Image (tube, rainbow, N blue to C red):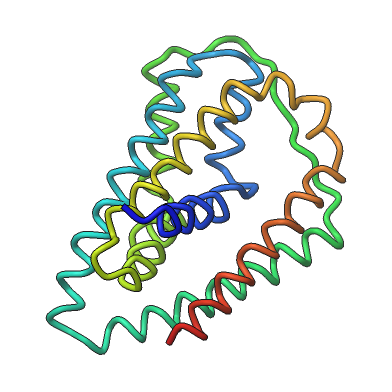
Length: 202
């Protein structure tokens, strides 16, 4: 297994997942409330693992039947990443948002997991990131798709467990808009660099 390909998958996975969104905000809230943290982070990470596997395996088979699809997805992915980078850069420069956490009564585990899975499997951005985008990037690593997939999957486990269990320490920090602006700035750099690599690699 190539360490460089693994690290590419890891950095790509982290770059896509570390963003302000409904799923991450939900995990962060659960971590801040210290409520059902383990089931929630496992549900998110395992769902990502399944979707990444789907993208890396099935997408390659489809491309074998339709060779024109690979460059189309590669350049389409690069365009999406560039848009993502520009959006993050704009947010880094102008956003005044801060995470607000509701401190209500406890929610049953079943209802919590239902919400978590809905935010994951019914979110088109999750499918785009894991199946379409990561799947298309994996086609660039002939014979090393497993290493890429493991890297991207590791990113999901690292992020969700870190977010869920580290949230209690982050509550003062992410109550400040500046923290999100710095984070968005870093995301813009990562997404822009990967978009450039996709285009130049073609």
